[in-house]
Figure 1 (cartoon, rainbow, N blue to C red):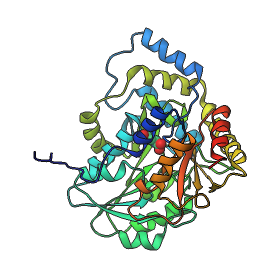
Figure 2: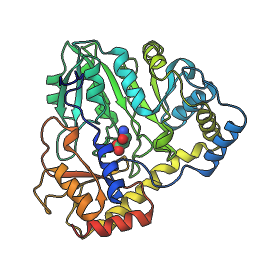
Figure 3: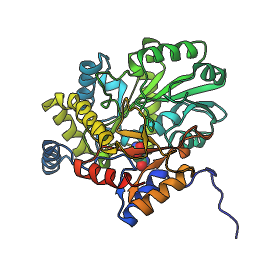
Length: 382
Ligand code: GLN
């Protein structure tokens, strides 16, 4: 029988799906795929119910509910000092993943080069390849996963259409600074390249630091898409509501794709989030302290284990080096961790073109105390 033609020969099922499936089958504690094991705020869920009952059940406007776009613009101004026009610069999307895909397809032509920094979140590469791009993958500098500007500069050229960056960074937890954006802007200045900045973990930056968005860099503002997600901010990854911010011209291109990809996003969810943002604007300010205490709790619980923890500046992910435990490749180690110890983690090799130094896996600490305690007890025995 002839093998089916495939547009993505290197792609199988995502590592998140594989690990979550295996965790469910074996009954393991799932610290793999990034999602909280606690609920969204009660009031937010009440609002969803109220809007369902009030009959807000038909198509939302293609670009997003105006009230939600206004609430987002207000939040970006208050929290980050960024001034955005709600109507022409914000598009509500089906989670961060749709926004990333639509942005890439809005601007990348066949043969264009797309530059990514490894480890890179798993959806960037396939989305760019489907647009006909050639990928240039530049490793981040170990051990702190900072941008290696010499290597990045060497990868950027006249064929570069898009640079994809991610801060706070999944899977490593590293964050970019105002200075990083200055250096990125300098590198891109002589080119026509655009920036796609994945900022879905913007609320999760720790130790008194603040998230630095690509949108706050004046030189990049005219040539960037910034992608955000409510899944992370309201403990509701299953609602799949996110948004993309870009200039009116870039948003117009973005919307050409979005309207045929998903058209519009769940109406009652958008109403509820808009109301909740107005009612409790300070909710977002409490996220970082909340997750910082989860991070510290998990680290304390793992003290004494043979896993060496890396610093976490942002996100709800903890990298751990298992080099003292075994020299297995990371995927094998994760498979054994699930089967023999009952804990799921995410290996890093699926996010990289070249092997990384060190033996690193990612744990999600967005979990109840009891979950973290039980997981740490099991991880203490590896
Ligand atoms: N963003 C989630 C993570 O990093 C995964 C989402 C997904 O499975 N597509 O764990």
